[in-house]
Image (cartoon, rainbow, N blue to C red; front, side):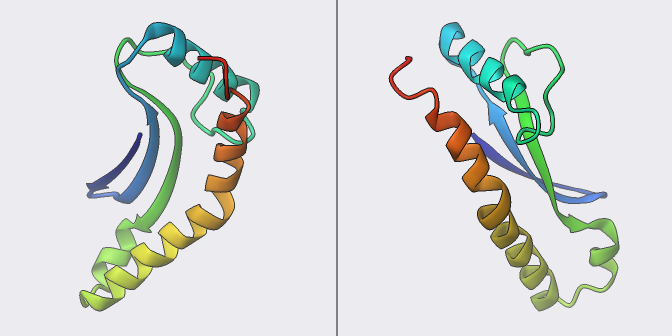
Length: 102
C-alpha cells in the first residue's frame, strides 16, 4: 500500500504492509528485511495491523515557505518522478521474488 502524508515537516511517501492474511504479511516483512538496502524502514518488529517498509521524503518543510502553488506542485511531481525512477523499480523487483508463494 502507498500512502502520502502531509505534515509540518513536509510530504512523504510511505510504502506499507496493511491488514491481511498473517502469512502474506510475514512473507512481505521477511522479504523486506532480507533486502534492507531497498526497504529503508526495516529492522523493527512487524506491527499487528500496519507496518512501514519504506519512506521517501518528497517535499521538505522549507519548500512550503517558497510556495506559490505552482512551485509546490512541481516539487511534489519531481519527488514522485524520482521515486518512480529510483526506488520503485527496486521495490517491485524484491516483491516479485515472492510470486507464486502465496
